[in-house]
Length: 194
Image (cartoon, rainbow, N blue to C red; front, side, top):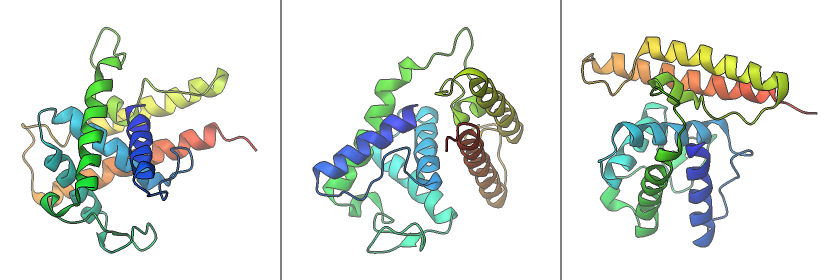
C-alpha cells in the first residue's frame, strides 16, 4: 500500500515538473512496482538514513539487475539517467528521493499490524494490503502468506547477524525481488477480469 502511494506521489511530482513518462500504479511495469516496494522496505529498515542513502540503495538494486546509465529511461534496454551518484542528480531528482522518504515516514504508522509486528516477508509482500473481494480475497491472502514464508526463510538482507559474502547477498536480493514479482504476478492472475 505504501509503495503504491509513493509511486503516485513520484508520478505527480514528475508531472508537475513536465515529465509525463510515469504510468499509474496499475499500468506500471512489474519492475517499477518491485522497485517501489524495495524502496519502501529499505526506508522501513533504515528509517534514519538520508535521501542519498535511499538513492544509493535504489541505484544498487538497478545495477544488480543489469541497468546502466543512459540519457533516456528505457525498461527494455535497462538504461536510466539517474544512475549517477546522488550529488550529481539535478535538484528535481534529489527531491524525488526526499518525497519518497517523507511519504514512507508519514504512512508507516498507518500499517495495521494487529497484536504483533509483521515479519520481513509479510512486509515485503504487503500482507495487510488486499484489494480483492470474496473468495479471490482469500486466495490472494493465501498466496501472500506462502510467499512471505519463503522470503522469511531466505532472511532479511538487512539483519546485522547475517554476515555473508557479497555474492550470497546479491543472490538473496535477487531471490527476494523474484518472489515479490511472483507475488504480484499471482495476485494479478487471481484478480484478472476480462
